[in-house]
Image (tube, rainbow, N blue to C red; front, side, top):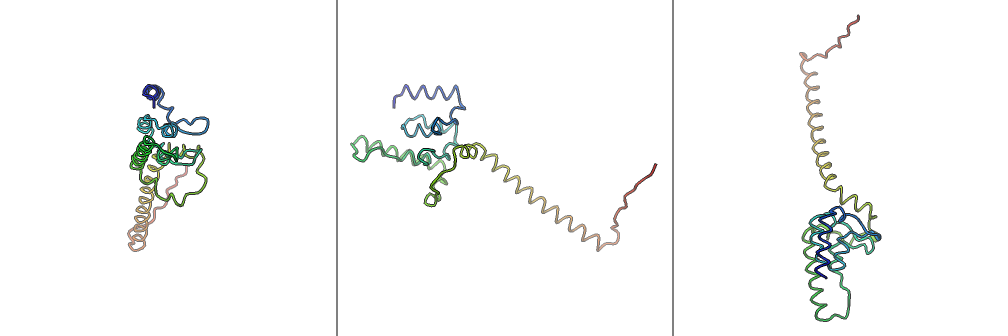
Length: 172
C-alpha cells in the first residue's frame, strides 16, 4: 500500500472523524475497505471507531477479522505466502480485540443483519448495556421496597398500635 495514500487517509480521518462510521455506496464501513485493501490505516480507524469491529461487511456478510483472513489467490508466490501470513496475523490481532465475535460462528444465520441495524447496535450498544444494568439495579430496588412494604403490612396486622390514618378533609 502506498505510504502517501495512507498518510492522506489518516489526515482525512483527523479532519473528519465522523467519516469512519459512514458507509460507502455498498454499505461498507472504512474498516471493511481498509482490511480488504490491506491498508495499514485500519489501526487508526479501529482506534477511532472500535464498534466497527462488530459490524459485518454487508457485501460478504463477514466480520472484520474474517475479511482480514481472506486470501486473494490459490496459486501463491513466496511474496503472497508472506502476505497471507500477515493477513492471518492481522486476523488474530482483530480477534484478540473481541474474542466473543468468534463464538457461535457455526450457528450463524445465512443473512446478516441489515447495515442500519448493525450501525444502530454498534453505536448504541454501550448505552444499551448501561440501561440494562440500571434496569437490573432498579428491579432489585423494587423487590427490596416490596419486601419492606410486605413487612410493614404484616407488622400492622400483628401490632394493634399501627392504625390506618383517616384522611382529614376540611370543609370551608
